[in-house]
Image (cartoon, rainbow over all chains, first blue to last red; front, side, top):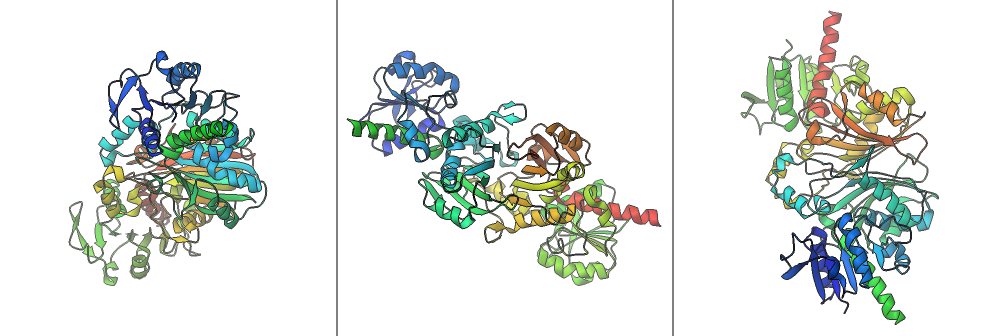
Length: 307
Length: 307
């Protein structure tokens, strides 16, 4: 069994990573976090402080910390010989570093030099749904409006929602912006382009935080290169890995599950080859922790075969 | 002062209608509702049962009841000589019945034969924002993803949200559907076409209910016939009636106000003349009660001038 470290174990994604690792049979798990969180417990296991010296003895390190901490700590883990799966945006768009959704571009994971980036929580289900449409009919453009749950902003933001009077619930603006575009919207565009290997694909995203605890939803308009009926799209998506058809996908249905739910597939009459659809996905599981573990399992299974 | 009746006075829109009428100086207000609600009080005024015999002595009747009740009661009010402003979908698409947002197509109100329909709460702010863009550059297509608050479903649904544990909040499906399209989505398309007098305009809407008490938001992609820069659109919208520019419009900011807030105006690179923008509006006020009162005021002021 590989020796695994979860860095950022006290965070929302870190906790789910620990749960999923235990569920999947990993039994040599170390928990690391900032000095502030060191000494606390997660699932009955003690959390140690992550320092440059922490990374001598791991086969795989899952990082779910901020970009600054990832930039500081990942190099130490790489020097220690660990396969690093990083959930921050620090390395996602760096040339030569694979950005991977296993069902979409799993082959890229095998080209790693120690570090593989785990995409944004909205990008992962979007590419799961776009890939079968791309393969069948090409993609001309994507427009997406997100409904992102507060757990995507972290455990503290989730607690804040739970503590807030319902009457104060609002849609909120949790991202920084460059001009009129949020960094989150640029991430969805640039990461989708990198994962699908379509560097020029027009992707216009509007990101909105909704007062829902867990599960992101997305309303998507897709223009394909070649005609694709809603029925054909439904058939393709029904057969796609980690995608499940639902009449009316909601975050509540998706939460706790491992798949992207997709439905409401219909014609968008604004353009010749237009489709509209709606999806929902657990942002902590397939949108984050699960995707990271699946990347690691893919690489580990390949090593096992190679050996 | 005109003798005014509010039919459906115990509902979410009815209560706001009463508030706004009082604010605006109306002082002869009768409250009507179903037999079940008769005898209760709204803003200290007694609610009477609405029956076919209720409508003998009103100048204006505001109906905010379901379609079935509107279809039953509006003809009696018309026979009684009242100007009827109906918020239900019963008459909105009937040829010859004006469907009016005063700032957009106020002239149509003056062509009424006693009955004027008040549009859907998502359609009203959408057309307020589209009209200046249409006048300046023509419209080729509209895509819209809604974030609709629970008060749009009524006072009971609002109370249900306030009573529900936060951890159970989800995006929900509150509409009926015909195939893959919700009736709410068809309303947005057909009403927008009627109000803007563009019967062929492609309008693709995806409607989602969010756990927010009051205020609807909409993410919109607009394709214009002629080029329009984001700066030009911003200038047009900044000068448009009942529209206010905001950097990041949210339902919470819009709630209690009389304007549609619009912002995040930027290029949509998927098409030559594409713009993306985001709007928010109080669904009970400008999205419903206020728009209805403004329609009545427009007609009444015209009568005064004519007399």
